[in-house]
Length: 308
Image (cartoon, rainbow, N blue to C red; front, side, top):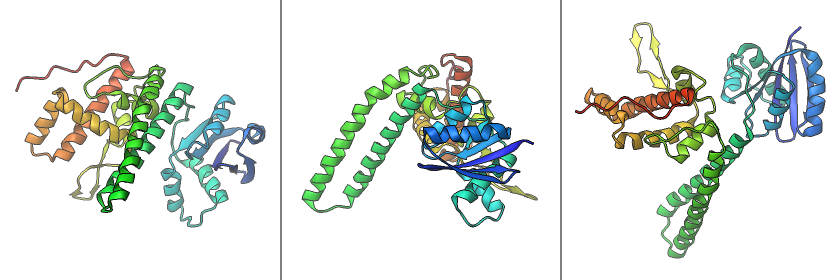
């Protein structure tokens, strides 16, 4: 009998539920605990093992399961949560979460999750640090606008300057980490080091999916909102917001650089499309081009811009 396993991951513990046997066990989330978990799972003939992304606490678990040849799937927390709502489960405990994840292993389609290469993991950590420092700096900048007391303003400006220096210091190690990633893209209009690093670290699937799949993964695929005779406006939803945020800025840079995206943007605006919708369409087109570059291991070679 094939088994479906859900694992609720925390810093210290791994709470496990197995279906259809309805087995439950808890293991410590460290090296010895992972060895015990693996010894317990292997005789069960596991079809799929599902757990949530847990801020990195699931990283060692994923690597151990992958080395053992078990099909491990890491899901974003939103999908098991939506499944629990659909099942009418209002209570929340680690044991309940583990059982919901086992149900997700049975019911929700998702491909296996490969572990990240060491170079990609290092790059991702530098990006996370940079994003955290930028967020802290921007929070202080907003706070500064509300302050009126001179000495307090000076103290806050000093802190902002310090954070800005730390952000600048990260650029060197980040570029070095990017150079170690073999899947990093070549140069293209708007494709600066931050977008290249973000795509390498946060979108390793680039080049392995078709254009619709990669657009959905980033959250740039428009979804229908129709009912009967009513036709609603299609909207994008979900996806990896950090990739989408950096891609938005890069798309504007590519538009200003008079790349083919500029012609697309102007044509959509001339057709009466709102600027926000036009730039979203350009983001999707830009992502499609980058996906083709990664797939074919080719340089940037868009069609020439037609004179207007």
